[in-house]
Length: 176
Figure (tube, rainbow, N blue to C red):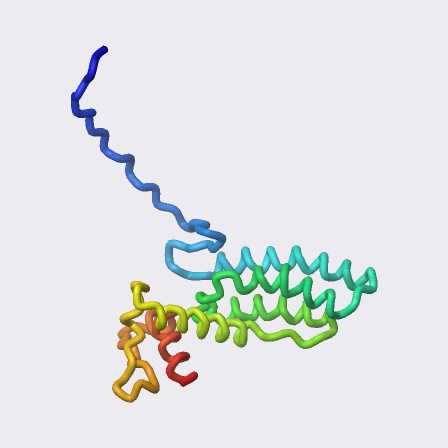
């Protein structure tokens, strides 16, 4: 029996490859931190699912069944990781709204807008973070001495001002 305690030779890691975009947990992240490519992928997925909604209508199913299908299959695609919705361009917002409007016409019923769904998700996530003292971002939700509102996060750039945490603090303060 031979036991070898030699230190293994160190091999340097290979250099990182620069990419233009990366798909990570279902969201496409561009190297310039724009969300256009992600919106294109989401709209493409949602439009593919609109076909099945049209088929359900052609079979003569009730509005409630089509609404349940929309919420389970199409809306879930649209609102997956919706916290980025607050800082997409007007053009990208219109693309997403067009999918909701098309589904609304197919179902023949008014559907909640993406802004409403975004606000609900934003408030829900912000509430969870502000109540969980072990969360790394818990300190960003600092209550004012009156305990009615939260202290606003100071931002220097518009990109940071329209990111999740400043918007979440503002939304929680308005809610109280």
